[in-house]
Length: 351
Length: 277
Image (cartoon, rainbow over all chains, first blue to last red; front, side):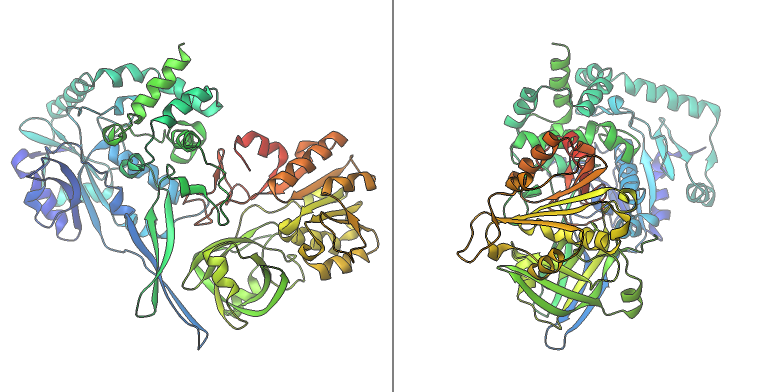
């Protein structure tokens, strides 16, 4: 464990920037909104920025990505296929703990199943991750319900915690340890780590009522979602409020459904693109020929919350699919973000 | 059997020959351009591949050939953009192939049992692989029965195979059409009317059922009424599919994915999925 003076914190980022493409939280002046995006000027990184509007999943799993390129000469009967992989070194600086859990979900899903996703692996394998402990939650946060904050537990290379004059620097990997050594950081004293504990415990007391109330309920709700003992009327009530806009899936750190399309360029080259998709869209499960086995919107809503809150999906993520960032509650025009869905199911259980 | 899978980048294959089957359905005989792959490409009956039509996209398609001693081919009905583009191709054109994916039909586990195949229309395509393979090892199985129905005599798939199969000793074939043509000499009526024409084995029996949902449900009911248990009724499902390897999630059904947990399910499993098939 080390410490670094608060004013020097971006020196860490500058050191990383020597051999990494940097991504970090930046606050847009005109709107006050925070984004987790590529930063060319390290001084733009704002460690006090609120939780970013979009999670950093787009760094590892871009909105739209060329995964393959091919050319087919129909006259010569000649086909050439090349896989396109992003082998650059990236560093995520100042990641919030919930977003780190989102990345861990994606790791286990893309890399830990029967098949390994080569595109994701290439994005991920050279990545350096620096997390930033939330010493106060934001309004929509409920990571205390899903065991994913306000402090990161594993998966980071370096974990930073604001302890007043300093940041406490915890290393979680050899890469992280090497960087701390190379920077000649001062060793932390016991009082520094004690201060962190105090601040994290304080943070936990500051969550909104809905998060605190749902905390005791989330496992019961998960049990109900898994076993299917939820009245159809609840799903219909939820489905009725769904605008089918797909926003919840776009802002979700662990949603990874994608679509694949081939497009033809004028020069004869074709690109295979993979793009984000959403299970809330009607065309999601529609087959060629028009048969759609998942037509009603409550059917599709039901499936999204099954993905986030069921044991069988949790087996793939080794944790609940929801990381408690609250972004879906933030963007949903129908008021069926995950915390509200938990509340609706809770009401039905306790009826 | 250790099966090498082509997971990420498709292997290029050549269409050696195209056979018109019935209206809108063609069979494409394929071989891999890479000789090593062509030699080592193995699959189980009931598995599927992801097939790239260059310039159009990729689609999931079942494998109708037997895994042993059979020409590698796919049989495709034109239903959408990519299959439409496939149908416009000629012999000599190239395709991309990834796979094989999915769990496949049971084979070793059902040796010694009676095997009943029930297919409706193009539902015979995925079952063909298992039928041919079981016929290749006829002595290892009990009674082998095929019940096949289609809308009209012109909609009967693999007519050349049907002819051949009807002449195989010990292979009981029953064929029916809903709407006969004047020269149709066979049985007429929906597929469930075939059950009265024969004595269906019930003990030590596995049934493979594949066809449109309405036919599927009628057949299942008939079989369960006669006493075949739901865990011995096997089917293969289809879903919109993009990756074939459990990542895109489009083929989710219940808590399973058709691409990695399926496409072959027992009826007992299908009942627990809680979704339309």
